[in-house]
Length: 372
Image 1 (tube, rainbow, N blue to C red):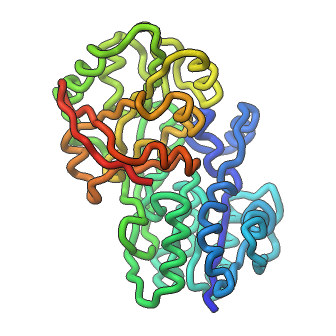
Image 2 (cartoon, rainbow, N blue to C red):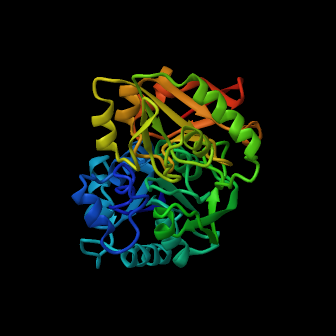
Image 3 (cartoon, helix red, strand yellow):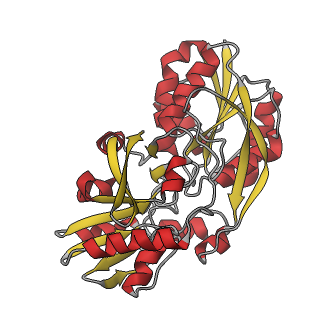
């Protein structure tokens, strides 16, 4: 009988759809709730646990009370062992306490649900310890760390493989995090905190997010020229975050939110740094297009840093109205030669799968495969 631990950060990802770029720091969770944010992590955990449930007769699951794991574990058919001494509302200290207790139990695998802040909490306790491998189930807003599976479902697949197959290799994966206060002000400041041991199997784990040093100004301007030239009247343009999008806004003479989502309509800035709710309001009854770039190193189009452009927004806009931009160098540097989506909605993920055109210069395109 194998033993696996599960720790859920109940507030992970709540800031994404309302445009708060994370939930670290005092008062941010309350602000997110006041803006209409809903918990995301339990739903993401369930996607992984339903896969793991295929071998539940051979796995003893150890988890935390209530929203930190027990609720979703029972929902997915497990009868978990529940550790004591944690009460709600939970804190980062509770995550570390849970990880410490689980590490002492001699588990075969630790599953944790959250974002980069949660990964830091786990690292503080577990560190580079091969005796307790870990798999992150992605649910946060900012996921720069390489300790997360590409999707929640793939986290479950990897956990099944690791627990069933002896000898699955481990690798040291980076735990990264950024300064959220600087992030909300449009400045990206990332730091390497350490490493966790993670199972290695095919393309189920994501890669470390890398910066855009290769995005030369001339190439970005060429991409921007190509996009601006084709922009249509009476169409709502949802401009995603990232330095690849910024030159478009500059050419239009509009203020740009580097790490947020802006709305352009008939050449004017309709709204800045919008959340999911506002997006759905602004595109209601109108033709709309989404303009996004690719996260360097990882290859994500949706589900990392742009959760405001949610599954509901994507469904309303339609796949044919998504415009993907990236430099050729960024695309060719992707290790697996594919793009990824993790919208949290399997139906939308499937809709986005297949092949997509990527604008890589002035009237230049590549065609790449999208997976989920």
